[in-house]
Image (cartoon, rainbow, N blue to C red; front, side, top):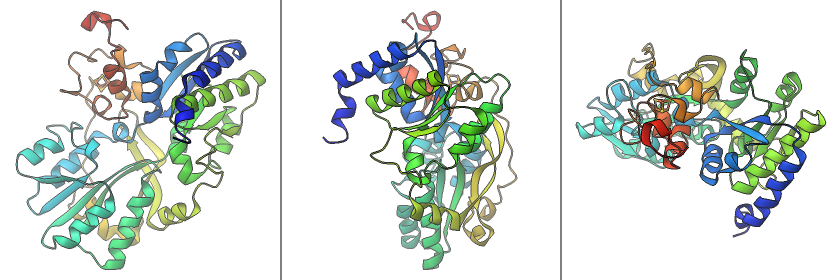
Length: 370
Ligand code: SF4
């Protein structure tokens, strides 16, 4: 299949691996921003194949993983209300809150449904006028246009029984927070191709210049990742720090202007908590005041709920690259995909889930090879 097969070609991948090994004169620390990239790297063993040339640090780009516990608890409180029909993408249903998860709320009689688009949730609101339909709007800039469109359409159509529980985060402030951390080791970034397909990469240019860090917009297949790594290594070896685009088949510098306009009409930047990391200034999207009627936090009075993250889950350390998942003392023992302590173990993009499913356990915990 064009644009897919060639990016999974083992011969091409091997050639790029050899180029990276030949061109890296020292071991560089790179961060892949996106959880989808993390899974490709771990599943294909790319980090192990290149461990002498590159240390891959897994970044905070899994949207489910960075959704803070208090936002999950707000979802649970809302979903348990008898008048509510709560909708979400499927990957949020098993994310543990303080006491339970959305799946358990459903088992106890809550009307919790999986949808594949926020516009499907809007249709449910039209078909169920006696219910309050809520959509859990989680994600990076990638999912923001569709969520913005759903709110915009709800207002256009006069649908009053629809609202969104917003937990949107954005990538550039996270890069700033990582680069300004005193113990930062990241020397170059693979930026998430799908985020840049929406937003373009102009926001990354001042970051590359300010922090002297190469940023390469990268796709998700094995050869995409390897090419992105090669481009970052070439910049580092040459002392350059620019934004480059490996994902040329999908991303333009300006992104998708129509999607950006839709997002800007409905959302504005605001402070946002990240799971295990804390609040990052102006790192999230929130509904503009004119759309407050569609804000589920306001509608159900949960906007002031604050919850402490559990101390045992080291999500913050994993999400900022300070800790590899198997080094968490709960990994593979008290925390497994069947009984997760944190979102990183259940999300399809979570770093802990990636290591667990690829059998990268701590030998002292399981007897398996690392
Ligand atoms: S292994 Fe579990 S407890 Fe440890 S950081 Fe990952 S999700 Fe949290």
